Image (cartoon, helix red, strand yellow):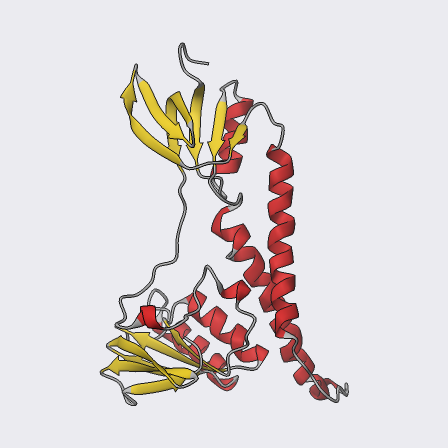
Length: 267
């Protein structure tokens, strides 16, 4: 430990980068603290990679079951228990999170501090950091604060109960018609998931003439075509301008699109 410091290194954020870094540095004879104010594992474990892949696996089973007759298998009725699908996804996230918790509980190096960290300034060649009610002097700080959901600037969005990356696992009401703003690969992944669960799905793509703008156009068109075969609809526009509650659903207004309005149950 450096002279006068509480820890050699403080890592702010216990996500996919912070945890392995904490163990690596601690194994190199440095004293390490890891500050996390909520859940270990970051977005990937808690609402991203792990639970989405679990949910998509359920959707794949439903899709294959509906095609069973093509393989000589008779399944009279395929019924999706959507709340059970989401419970399974949440369970996968919880299992991974509990495993991370157990690995750090009681550890003397690295030390897990469950609280919010705030940089106060430089002091004695190190950093003064407030972590909850503790004031720490540390030699180095690693910022591993991760990601958060980017909400697009759509007029009226605060008036509707929209689905986003942070809350989708807790929304057990299966959409009758989901309009999904954004044609990135994650947007397409979720479009296919909800479609295979039984929702009507419309993907609104703005500021581009094809989906997944980062991909080659022929690859993007192939992905769009595959999803269209499953019943996903696509609308291209300049931007999603506004949204407003409409009865038991909502209406999304688009710039530069035909139709200029889309009515749906969920956004």
